[in-house]
Length: 246
Length: 246
Image (cartoon, rainbow over the protein chains, first blue to last red):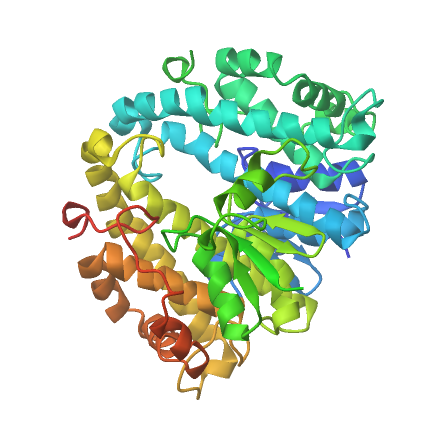
């Protein structure tokens, strides 16, 4: 049975971290909400999982992965489950825990990137929190962006398998789901904060090389050229407000 | 070899979610930073893990658990590792993923609770973001606190093992690490937002019963009466600013 991914149909958002893993592995999956409603697909299918009282273990939010009888919410938990099945994580317990730890740190940075444009409330308009957004974005650019990127650079430097590799990997010598997620995070940051991100990537050359390597990876070439790949836009986690960059 | 927990010594913070699991299970552990420096203990031991370039896989932040050769950061990853070893998670893959999913949702709410008093930057003083904190805390109380608590109540209601249980559990009929973490989250919310939390708990009686049940659990009685249990205070994640409650 094909995997089912349930996520908002018009933004890459957190769904993209899951989609990249499925696409890289080349496994069949149904992007449920982007299909026409009916036959158990479309938006009603996702809303059923999130809101119907008959669902015994309802996720708090999307993305949701359905794998047979398993209904899994939380991006990092989905990737924890998919990693071994898709060959996107090492075999040892140590590698699996480390990959998950990196993924959770990526998830933390995703929240902080989102909160630059919504520092007061995710249900409020940007225009109603623009002044606060400017302050938070400045702190993010000066302190958090720098700190997170220095950490990603450090763990890439300390992975001994990267010593002679053309393209660095986060864990061992193969692509893991964390590599795909770090690519997406950097891609989003380049969209939202092009000036600040380009500046910080000059001091994080291995992060930049990882991003460029995934961007041109042969296993993702068809996907990136397809309509399945959603562009960043002003409704998602990463939004381009020039006044928040600098 | 005893587990080592590395965390800031003066706040419960995220370290407490790990400490509760270790204490409930009754296993030996060293609360490293609270020991006198020297003999590889104290603050230098934690700073070594976080900052020394010789550490090949440095966590981004504490808490950190050291279990033999494994060095694990990220609270949820630590509990994912400890759960099966301490008997604090079910045996099936479905139960383990669900417990982890609940834990990650608790972690999301912890971030949001923290950001009520630091909506602009974690490195800035509260006094320098008090106006923004008031706005964010109002949104948190009105929207997020209500939404998260309704979800915890719903999943407790839908756990069939709770139908006739005196004290409800999140997963199956036994205490999991997620139960201990939800207890701590509710305890922190009652400290930080006593008015708003008591109000929302009236509509979430199973969450309230879970909290009360863990608070008086015989396996934690000695711990709660000991100096090992750190009180909430104005340096931690959960802080009591009366102007943010209501």
